[in-house]
Length: 76
Image (cartoon, rainbow, N blue to C red; front, side, top):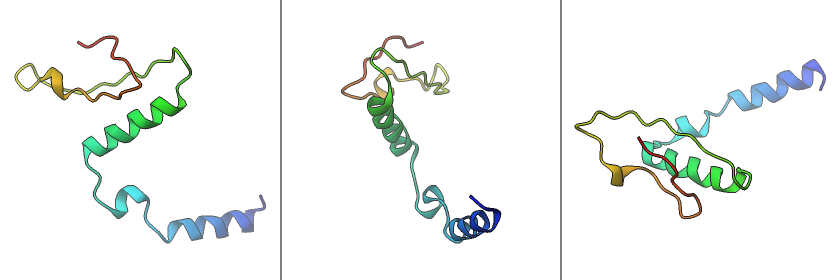
């Protein structure tokens, strides 16, 4: 791609905000999208590792995000 074409592409992209900034996007929606993406893109036997910070007082195992096609292997 030539430099002038690259600049014009960048200028078109810069005029509109990224989708995440255009509308509110909750953490729950983000995690759901991440799990959907992982379910589609992971190789069979592949693993997705998530770090979700919590304190012992606020930790509730039922609130761990899950997906019907993914299996939770380890949780600590």
